[in-house]
Image (spheres, rainbow, N blue to C red):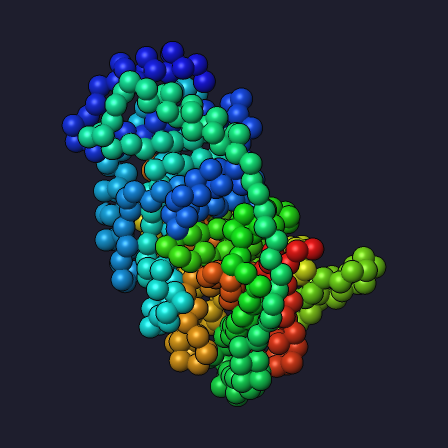
Length: 450
């Protein structure tokens, strides 16, 4: 970044009177900047930081210092669309490199449902999206700095951005290792009993419900967030969600995309049906072959796939998918997987799509509304952000949301882990319990000093 020419671009800029913010788009070329260095450099903004990384390496977004956005106590898609538009209309852009295409994002999402929240989720709103002052996308190799115009000093602005980037590059990231002090399963026997009772209410009209539970992990000291950030990079093939709000940190390494929209093309996927991954490759190959023929898992998967297709039909055209699922491989588990693509209608509202698709049958059940009510009435806790939709919306209407599985909530020295299993006719309570233990493994691995 040439300081003199970049500063001249700023000096020549005519400020619009109807936009309170100036968004300066700058390149990251020539800087050795990593996720950990950015987050450590801005450690004074703990409680106002996020990191959202695509499993396909399409984006790698970090946001620092929530300066604008919106929160709501209920979900209304038209109101949220208006609030989103209002936030982006506050921005005037200036590029320090004309080749850059990066636009500002708002990051956030909504809780799984509107069940009265327990104290552990008080830091997170029912619906909330945040505009961060500093935004980085390490895949686009670009960043945005948003400054209030009434505080803007053109002279020295480029030097300030350059000074910040140099500071990030020089930042040393120190990691402190904590040890697990205890692991406590919350109501494991009661959960198995709930599964058993649920099997008695499933029928031809109530096909499936996903029941989840918690594992409370206590460390011997406060959890070092630098350690968590470092551990999150260990596994490919999953999204990374790291979301700070006040004194809470929500973390997810989810395999599941809810949907994305790029250039009016909507992409989603059905992920349902799972088996554990073993250490022996030969055993895994045999298990995968049986997995693709297993009636219970195939039934669960097809139900989820067809429900998702039904959800997106009102907002899309030209839906394309394969009749037979493939296998998605993660470090600890295999899933049945079907990608689904369609063209988004021009008048479609992103929040309409979000509300219609959440929750997928993979995390709620079928029929969706009945399963949601059953979960609210019978699970032993409030899900909060577990299995909730989290993601970003850009000013150009590109968006991506994930289903926040394989997740935990960090507070001080404790972490609450979440895992669920899809209950259908023929489910075995003991096997479903074992499946949830497998699904706790990714977050336990993040916490452990291996």
